[in-house]
Length: 632
Image 1: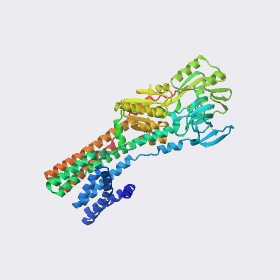
Image 2: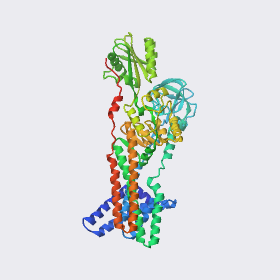
Image 3: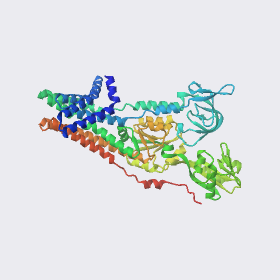
Image 4: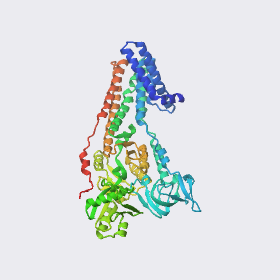
């Protein structure tokens, strides 16, 4: 029996196509050629093929004492065979098979996130030997306390503290932040982060599964397992509906002694409109979302979206664009355009994120003179004179500082900016560039739309410091801000909010967000985010437009409402058919005609979702843009 079930499951799509073709041939034989024998034979074959997987599933459900919808359909189809209604048996099984296939298609959810994370985990480390040499070792065999050498461009293989050296680390995989972290002696580093510049000697404090990165993998796996057992709506409903119809058929049979009438009750009670109505609404709603840049991973996702009352946003790459840009330029001495052009030319020689932000300000060619990097401070460019671009320490050392410069730096830093100072050797040119990750232009409109559509609480979580996160939040309708959050902290806060009775949606884009995404009641990923975040999520915003969250919320409510309408139509049809049957106005043939009309009605009702559209006022978005003023 198991092998037969596996065969039908593995070839579900092919069997559905074959049965569809035979149904069409049967109808053609009846209506075009007026040949009843081929019609009956084809209908019989379709009915038998369609009955087998349903019957096997019904037997399996009965073994665990569950009277599923498959039991009702199986009995109704067998009854239809007994009274010679092969066409009804064929149509009922085909509808059931189609609905089951559509539902499975929309509920199919990827499980590749954990595998992808595992592939990204560090595997090899350069372990420093007692004689000072290094030797490659598998990270699984490294013990806490061993010293690891990490070179520029390498992945940090363990959690640990720096015992020698310094450098700039890309910690996006752990805290989601795009800007490089300057790490020095005694500071903590995490497995999975990348050393962009410098050389480090790290003493291991945690390895393998005990590292922060390892715990990310573990949390994602656990949360996914806890969310994977989602009951289908139709099966929840069948717990009550199926026994009721069977009891009614049995009572009718006992009272009237009319087996055909009892079987007719089962056939008419078989909720074809319900079987097809919910998947049609699902497919239409999901199709509408896909057309508008929103990928829903199943019908249950829409139901969960409707229940959400709190949304938690990761900051970097979600509410912000995810890479630093020049937000403010303060010219203290010299001509604005000349300074900007010269600074952009010089920084075009560097791959540092802050340098690249300045380089993008103009399309000027690279600086033709010599450019020297001063580690941890910035660069010195030599042309007709020396030019300095870097932090306050570099400028103080090479040119000197003044009160105005210190006040400007302090002011821009307070606003959450990273600082790059430009100064010329002759001290005739001095400017301060404030650089920070910029708020997405549509963020304010998007969050206001969410509030307008019933979301009660909006929260920001960030691996960055709280001051920077609050600076971003000050421009948005945010209720709560949390900074300096590691992946485990984000996941824990999601659980705390759930424990307080909130239905939580988490919106993120990075590997570091995946534990929180996996633990949330609903997970949304920005399409430009990592594959891991996208895989773990229930909804993916393909267009990278935060306004699509509100659209997804409204569309979910419309789709769930449409599903409920179809359920009501299906049940009302069954009730009216029963009344007509017992009153003597409805027979098997006319009853099935009405039954099939109700199926057509729910399909048409479901297809209305395809044309649903919510207008967005783009003018609000453009009004929020604050471009850097580059005019002289």
